[in-house]
Image 1: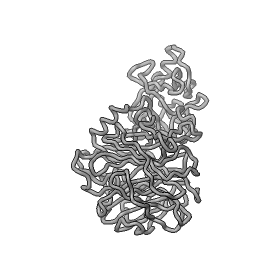
Image 2: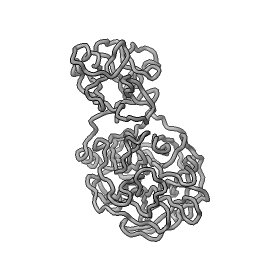
Image 3: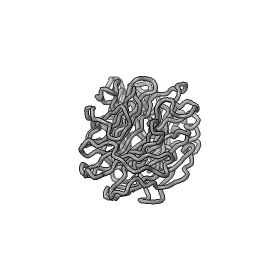
Image 4: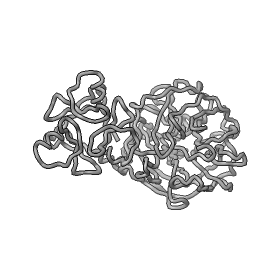
Length: 465
């Protein structure tokens, strides 16, 4: 959309990739090094998001959470159900944002919008407080302006010079097009009058800030379905100047700048236009250059049906407490190694790999249960058809009802091995045809003997969520 673009789908807010349990707290949210009080070193990540799918089968406008130990591959919590949902305004949220505040607790902001009614104009955003993201208190809506327009994709940053937090968001002001606005606050309960933070003279949404990078502040945003950057040596409203080369993967929105914890690499994340949201990432060794190259899609896996994500660093203790509170998924998804945009699913009872996203999305959810013929192996139990399992028949994989026979049990049992193309991934050897492995050919799954490089890639999968 151009004249009235939709809220974006930020996959992160200055995420720092990699694991470094002994690394001191670096930049989190939009805070600069050392801005937070001392606490245990951040060594994991939490993501917030809402969900949509191609036919809106999985449209849920509450706050969802996922966690990660590497910032790339994510585990949804609470079975990918929301952990809190707004009760006022539109009764739903988009574009959540999580930030650790100066006192070490968290604040959650979100767009006041349920669904895709872009004509719904809310002057408010949703706000929660949270000590640990296991409970959410003080729910309120915060009014940002008196204009007859929206307040999309709110984010916050600490402006040390002002001693206040800035809240940036997309809104239409007197210019007649979307700009990035800012209000300042100390408590996320009252705010100053809105100001134009960035207006390049054309329609933009989805501002995302990285503050204090070698003395420069970077603001990325969506322009004409592409991701573009601006920069400034101050955080003053009106001080940012566009400078970067646009990047996109189809229609892309909601940029998010990310820095690795273990290298000098920067990542720029973007989300394809809703509801067909897929995260893509680019990388650069020099943020100041404004140029990016695509990141291998094998390296990252977003939570199922996630949209407009926010990512904040957390401690190992916080990670463990979140998993203990909300629980890990009772299912998995399998990503193809040589077609990493495709996932194992059943369709018309045929096993295959198809491009994510698709509906019905539960076709790609599997319970990896002890093998029906050998408990040291695994069987793939369908989540949406729990009496059915993937089994081979004439070497082709299909979804069949368990008839209780020893033949079915053997056909539906596989042994997980190190990935034939990549040992950090997985391959699955047939129980009763042990020279054959699950592989895809023309996107359809079957069991075959494996020898060539291509066949090894066809037979390699990532077991995730």
